[in-house]
Image 1: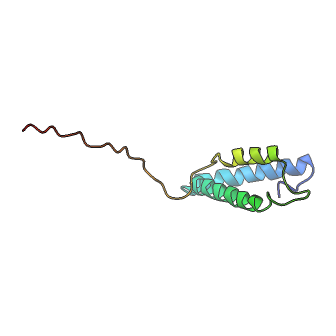
Image 2: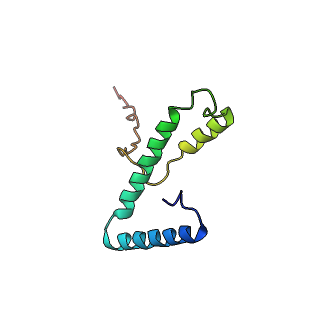
Image 3: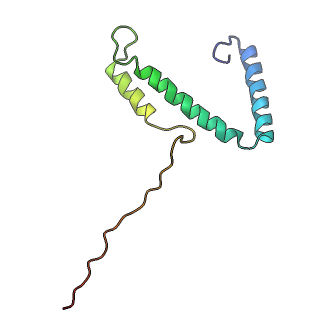
Length: 102
C-alpha cells in the first residue's frame, strides 16, 4: 500500500499509522521484531529466487552483465536475521605425536 500511494499527505498518514502499529506491537508482543526480521529475510530470498528465474532470459527483462553482477553481490549480503540451521564451527587439531622411548 505504501508503494502505490500517491500524494505526500496520504503517504505521511500511512507511515505514521504504520509506525504507531509497529510501536504498539513491539510493546505488547514479545519477540515480534525477531519474527518480523526472519520473515523479511525469507521474503528477500523468495524474491531472489523469482528474479533468478528471469536472468537467463532474453529481451527487455534480461539484465545487463554489470547489473546482474551487482544484484548477485547485493544478494549475497544477508539482511535481517539469519534463517535456517545454525552451525557452530569447531577447531579440530591433530593429536600431538607420541614420543616412543624404547
